[in-house]
Image (cartoon, rainbow, N blue to C red; front, side, top):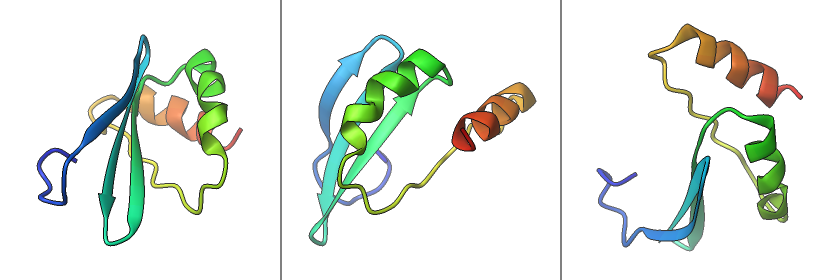
Length: 76
């Protein structure tokens, strides 16, 4: 997100296990979560899921085990 020239990026929350960033572009607000794949981290983030209209799920392709964890978490 930082490499994209779409506006000012604001850190909304910094917490052990995840960071939340926000940027607005063309009347759309994007919330970007930089998180580890951990059930407790995902559960803490449930409060932020209200009124969402879409999800873009990005996984670091460097580690195959992360793919498996991410797939399982996404389908939970």
